[in-house]
Each structure stands twice: as C-alpha cells, then as structure tokens.
Image 1 (cartoon, helix red, strand yellow):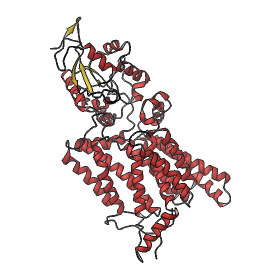
Image 2: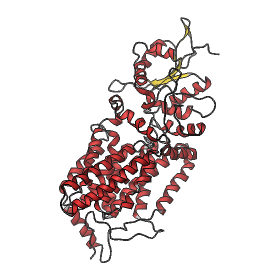
Image 3: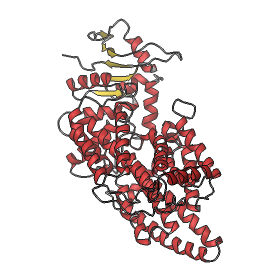
Image 4: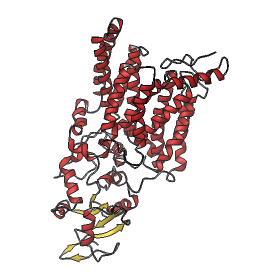
Length: 549
C-alpha cells in the first residue's frame, strides 16, 4: 500500500508528460475564472493606474526613460523630478490596454495573480502535500492576497517575494543547489525595473542570513559547518543581488528615490495602505483568518518549522500587522509554512492516510511533483486574446472611488478650453492623466495625484488646505489660474463654492459679479446624506478668467 509522503518531504512521483493536463493547470484556470470578475470592482479603480499606463507613452514620446515629470502642472515654472523605475511592470498593462482596453488590463492582472497562486500550489505539491490539501491552502492564500487584486506593478512583487522566500527556504534545507540560488540575480535585476518592492527581497535575504549566522555560531557538529557554508554562499549571492538591482536606468540613484518616502512619517500616515489592516471593517475576516491560523497550525503540528521558515513567517507577520500594503506578502510567505505544518497535524495525517488506503493498491492521492506549463500558458493566452471580444463592455471603475461621469465632464470642458488649469481631488489625478494626457497635441496636466515623491509634502498640504477651504484658498486658486474644479460633493470647498454660486442653477451660463467671472456648478451627482451625515457624489465647477466666447 502506498503511503502519503511525510510532511515537508518532496513528492516521490516524477514529472507528467508535457502534453497532459495537470491539476495545477486546472487550479490556474479556476483562479482566472474567480479573479477576472474583479474587473467590475476594485481591480481597475486604483488611483495610480492612469499614470502607470501613460508612463509608457511618455517614455516613447521622450525616446527613453524619464527624469522630469510630464503629468503635473509645473510649480513656479519648474517640473518636478520623476523616475520611471517601474517601466517593466507597467509595460504588460500598457500592452493589455492597447489590445483590449480595460478588459485587456484586467486580463493581464488576472494572469499574473493566477500564475502566482499556481506557483504556490505547485510548490506545495512538490513538498508532498496531497492535492486537496494543497488546493485548500491556495484558497487561504487567495483570501490573504485578495486586498491587492489591483492592476498595478505591485502584483509582480507578490510573485517575486514568493519565489525569493521559496528559494531561501529550499537552500536552507539543502534542496536547492548553489547554482539554483544564482537565479536570484536575474530575478532581482528584473524586479528593480518592475517595482520598488524589490526591497522586500533584501528583507528576505537579511532574515535568512541572520538565521544562518546564528546557526553557524550556536549549532553543534555538522550543522554548524553546513550553516557556515550556506552563510558564505548566501552572502555572495546577496551582494550579487544588490549589484543586479543597479542594472536599471538610474543605477544607484534608484535607492534614494525609493527610500525618500519610506522614511517620512507624514506620508506613512497619509495613505490607508501604510496603516494597519482594517480588522473591524467589512472584509476584515481575511486578515484575522491568516493571523490566527499561523500560531494554530504551528501549535498543533508535530513538525517544527525550520529556523528560516519561522523567521520569515514572523518577520512578515510583523509587517502585515503594521501595514495593510504588506499583508499579501505576509500571506504568500506564511501560507506555505502553515501548509507544510498542517500535514503533520495528527487528525489531518490520519484523514489522508485513510484516503490513501481507500484509493486502492498502486494508486496515490499525491500528484506529480513537476507539472508541465503548456496548458497554463494556453489558458493565459486564451484569456488575454478573448478579452478583445468584450472590449468596452465588461470592465468598469467603482464610481465611489473614481466618478467617471463627473471626470469625463471635466475632461470635456478642458478639451474645449486647452490650457485651462484644473483643480481636482487627490485620487482622481491618475484618471485625468489616463484620459486627458496625450503624447502630442493639447494635453491636460493634473494638479495633483498619488505620486507623493513627485508632489512633495508642501504641495500635498496645500492641496488639503484648498480642499478644506481654509483661509487663502481663493488666492491660491487665483495664483495658479484654476478655471475648472472637480471634487467630492461633501468637501468644504464644494460647499463654499455652492454658496458663492447661489442662485445659479447647474448648467446655467456664467455671470459677472463685481467685475469677475464667478464659479458656477456645471455638474453634480450629489447624493443624500447617509446615516453619518456624509455627502456623497462629485461636483464640477467652472469659471472664466478671460471673457468666454
């Protein structure tokens, strides 16, 4: 009678024929079916998607990588510095848009996410987990990463974090050779040109180095000698990985560019993604689930995690608890650790032993350790190619996040008056750049967007002072010659402008009062106040500093 492989032991089964459909392919297909509907929700509603896409257009127009920001109104006649260091992560989404619009972007994001989770599944099979248990833990990983199912280069960091952690854990166990570990060098070179999250890779390497250093000092006998050998080679690879990250358009200047915000507490408190996960809000169960499962699995299992596994899981759990943005990375590091531990929980072990016994002689519920990729590649290509047939008919943006009707009205009026300066809400700058910035001819320049490294603290604080209608707001708008405003209906500035425009109906012609052309409301989707007294919707205001024709 065949036996279920011991927890954490590699699968004894060989590779599957290249043309055979494997369970990993089916998992990938199912994940694509489950993930793609997010295209009708949050997937495309990220405030920065627009400028990510137009970065590629700006690079093509410039004939190379950018060093000056082309998207935001210059301040004091000077454009801010801007590095397109994420160009390789933006390119697939740009190609997706060129192919099938928003549906193409969603298809690319879906393929990246499904591929990442397929890698998790394949790794668990290789570790000896029966396919039902591996599939169950992939579901946990999907729940843990769901908060980042958003089309942006961050998706590639999720994949690269998993691969880096996996290589370090396998090298520690002796299942990855020195040569295999060298794959980290091209990975880091690609990562540095894809997303600034490559810093997470160095955190993984640092934790692994620390563990090996401690073992080389305090382990005994052959374990100490082996740890010293691993420490030496891992140190060399880490130095090589650092050198590989310098293979980017900005070389060493990439590092101060990335770290300029990470050390600024103002920006760390500005965005929700840098704050702890919202445990008490709807959907907070996904964070609670993962946090409770980790100590539970480790406590119930007869198998102790390796020092590297434990170190990485604890460190990334810490990051996940302190920053919402890090939680998906925590899930991709911790879930494989929990999955391997779960196989050594007595009742789970007994359950799968019974299933193995019932499967009959010569049969196994374990699957081949290596599953071919041909069907996965075929499914991915089919999804991307088929997206063109639903172009413009499926994907959409969440109106509560990106009010497209109001912003399209703003864009229309700005196109009628090229050069008119627009003031708008912080999260809408990316959409205005997406649809209003053109490589040639008249283009809209946003007033602000979510690229804090471009905007700087002073400009962000000035934006909020205007939005809150604090003293001096009129002078600031006049200084910048703002003639169009698109903001949330509940903003203090909207209430102030509505009072100033009292008596002028929406869509009515402008009037002169006291020798100046007055603000008037040209669009409103204002909704009734909710139970908390909040006003929802968007409003658009217009004025003419020069007499309209």
